[in-house]
Image (cartoon, rainbow, N blue to C red; front, side):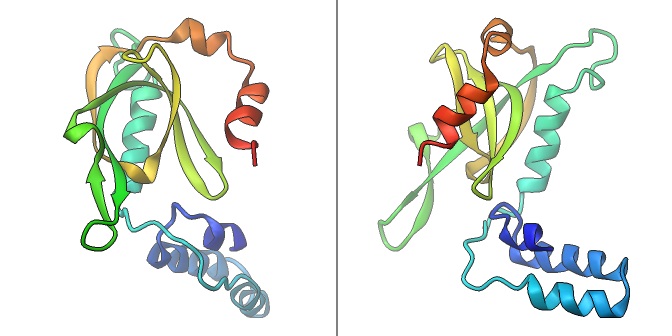
Length: 166
């Protein structure tokens, strides 16, 4: 329950629902303890309710099961968002709404945020994208690229460099 409440990629409504599911699986005594002990105040939560659909599409693109004939893992495309402070805090599309085309390799969780590690052909390198800042994710049917770069990656060193630097 603490993990559910502290995960920034789970919106508050779903966090409460998931905690209630956990509480239904234990005795009333433990359920009371869980609800009392797991309550977090003023936690930043995502307002992107599409996140579950986005993660599902990313997993489908990374899975060989989607295209049974060719056993191909696919590229995805999406719009990537940033926050602006013009007329209050608002989400706006980066690159003037241009599509990002990425070969997805891993979904990672760091500091309560969900990230996609993917190969960006335009930049010729692996990059990380916050899943809650993605919108309009689509599988585009093209085989992914960047396999050699991903296979050569020392995952522990990469994670330390990109996610454990603070």
